[in-house]
Length: 193
Ligand SMILES: C[S@@+](CC[C@H](N)C(=O)[O-])C[C@H]1O[C@@H](n2cnc3c(N)ncnc32)[C@H](O)[C@@H]1O
Image (cartoon, rainbow, N blue to C red; front, side):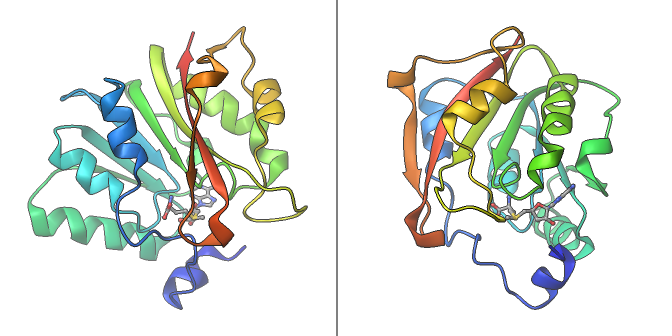
């Protein structure tokens, strides 16, 4: 996938018209406290990073599209809010300090499934013990991608209970995507052990 061209040509069907409803969901669960550090890998032109900064989070956005990162920079500059901008393959990024939170929104389903183990290693390395991966797992039965399906069975294998504490299944919350044929994303906060 040539992400840069997709942004340059505005061919971005994954973009939401408004904020992801999971923002309220995570806040209701008490997971979005002021002053936490949060990274949004594969941020694209999503509006949630700015909203998180407005709410007092210390935001890092990462993407390999220059156009997407430039869009984020401008959005933060217009509001006069600080953020950290990381250009390149997010899976290779090693931050100077560990994060409290990872905002996972249509990044894991965007990367090749062969890179998923590297994603899990990176996510674990990014977080403080007790920090959370705020996961939105894209549910999709069709083969191929992106988006590539992230079934809960596959995610339980990828994020094993020896390294991640999973919530009860009854606490999973599905959010249909407004485009992408309404495919649900299942919200599940995974605690890094
Ligand atoms: C499906 S888009 C989602 C964008 C954004 N999260 C949203 O919900 O609007 C996937 C994003 O991941 C970025 N991306 C893909 N592979 C990446 C990688 N290895 N490192 C950093 N960013 C990557 C793309 O440039 C794109 O912005």
